[in-house]
Length: 136
Image (cartoon, rainbow, N blue to C red):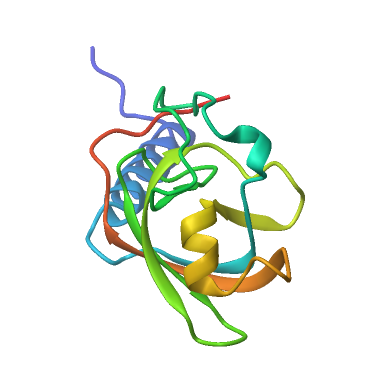
């Protein structure tokens, strides 16, 4: 004889469906924006491997973000002066509390971030990368 699902089993099923739906919403183009503090890579990281395996080069337009998939193209805007730059996520970080993105030195120059070191930024996903990596 078949028993009807219990109330808690039905609740778990609907919570799971909701979570799947929510996760799929995050993959649409330009669906993700975030505001917080942005900084840039120190010179000592030049030539070192990023979490994705690419070598960090300060002259490239790249960035570190803690959750966006590698290969994601984002627009970073310095909200103090309105300067923006488009970068590709190829690393995990930043690892300093309150920061949402670390950009390469070239990107930092375009944002006029070098002298300040840390500025308020807004990031917007332009194109989501192909695969999510957990990183370090």
